[in-house]
Image (cartoon, rainbow, N blue to C red):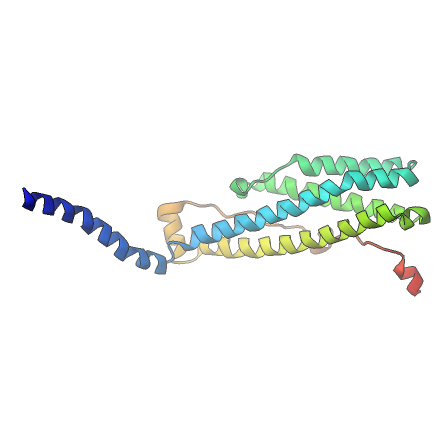
Length: 210
């Protein structure tokens, strides 16, 4: 009876021992590379979404403030509202980052909002009273800071995806992906840098300097 029990315990311990022995070997062979880099890319994307949402949240107050001084600039104001609606309509979650169509729609809509905001800030230059309004100045400063955060988040995501996608194509991690994970490359931003350039924010210092 004791001998049978000992054999059963040994049978349980041997696979466990082998698993513990193999774990460092699997790690050294790049088994953990893909899931680790995948999570890093997803985390970077979540930060991109956070910053774009931060920008979207600022826009209603910005539009209302401008409307108080330049209500007849209806076309420009409506274009910002419509662009915001489109930008928040398409959501690319970390789980769908490998969907090219969804990613392109997201990127195009965010670029459209950036363009609409640039036109709005250009119109503001014609209204000195609005440019001096403290509420508008505060919103403008928040927008500028958010655009800078978006640029940083995009940069970090682009790098994280570059590393992750490279792992899917290079040995030995590509072997693990073929045999085990089956992951697809993540989509990345393709617009030209100038097309996604943050809107210029002028606090009147340029004219004073001239």
